[in-house]
Image 1 (tube, rainbow, N blue to C red):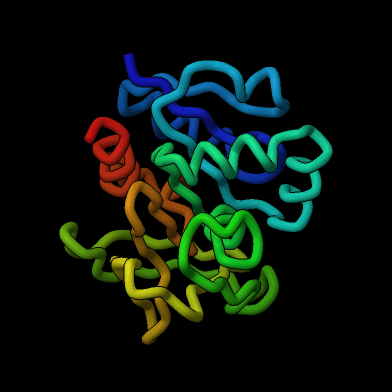
Image 2 (spheres, one colour):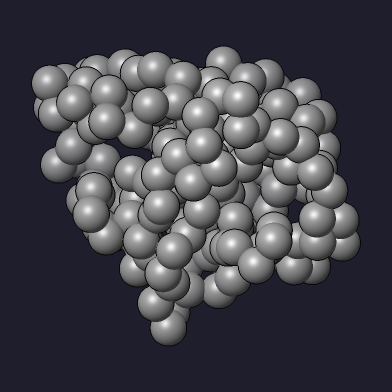
Length: 182
């Protein structure tokens, strides 16, 4: 049976677990190095506060093993802060550069519908969201809003600047689960 690890240090991790459960996919939370040792077929890095999550990862001895596993091909889905954490500046596993809080503070949060490559229009909830300011040649752009890249894929890594776990639409999580079985 497939099992997805969800980084549960801070942020919207419970909602990802609920979405996977609704889809019939088993998941578990990773809060420390012992949790990380469990067998897993993929990893979700949720939204939250990227600086706090990077600090907690370092404190819990997770930065190196998580970064290495992603670099060795562990399918990974980063949403919002998770997108930031995978960029060139942080874990450096994706050839992207994130622009943090690109839409302003909490009051700059919004919902929209936009095209997502291969899916048509999907709901997108942005909360103090980043966008991808730069994407390398190996990065496939999957969605843009107002000319800004808000979803992309590189190899077995998928990122969204928005929170698909908050909208009830399973298609983006299904794309990630398919990446885990490919």
